[in-house]
Image (cartoon, rainbow, N blue to C red):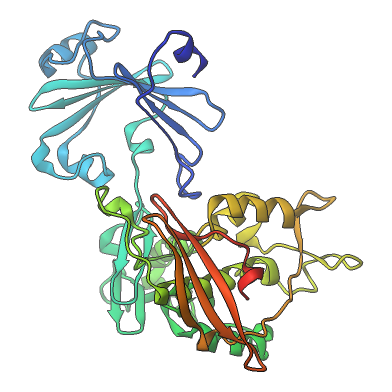
Length: 431
């Protein structure tokens, strides 16, 4: 970046991918100028550069040249990404765009030329194949319940099915041998309300051997996941091929469940419409977000995560009541990503810095937060909207305590682009 500044090159746009921790390019930075686009890895090392102006490529190829000249200059030993494959990779939206990518392997890098109707419209040099950098997961949306998950690109559509019903979905493996039965990969379904879950969890549910795990909250309903109950192909000669394929797909289960996201009524999924206005935030939605915030906070700083061994096994320091985080929250990045589902980025940074500690063995630990609430939020009533700006709102609620004495509690929200409405304050203030 210093070189650009020293040469007085204006940066038009700059983006760092911090949204999806599971993405291959998480932490990478993308910079656009009028002349060139640049891509840097997490260590700010340049690994891709692309031109769409008159700058000639190393062998004289320029934007506007036809692909016949490209082949004469670089030869015919190349990988051609046709429109069908580019749609599958997510590079273009429709095969009607008639775009193709020519990729030549040269020493330890790749030269790529994009052409539309056989005319070059951009070219670039990169460290990676296009198929490696553009590979996208397949997003599944469930509008009825209100969530999305992502299936790996490696999952062939012919090898699984998603069966929907009113309470959730069942994902089944479809065997190549049509004479044997389907096998369950996993289910996602509604357990009940947040209140029902908390009551069950706090009254012994935590100690039970669970055939399911909580993955999130949609519209104030807890969504849980369960896997297969038996290995139905194991030891069957006629199912040997399918058993291997099924086992390979099961290795992706944790990653799929980690991709679970609620489809926010407030428009968290702004990628679907970049021109979308900031969505409304009502007092009802504000209360739902408050419930979700409490649940997310206690999942991190009380339970330590969703995929956990027992507390006894995770005890790090008995004197200071410190416990190791569970395997799904075993890094600061994972903890931050989980908290950012509902809290502002600045608040999450503050939480992680103040509450996440590194033990002597290098693993992350926390002190269990066990404060309860004396307020009955089910009876909360809106008193006023004290701030009602486009991207900032504050709701004042009157909430009774156990003695039916009313308290005024303010919930403050900030709209964060490409994320949605987020709570600005620590949940200890609105338990």
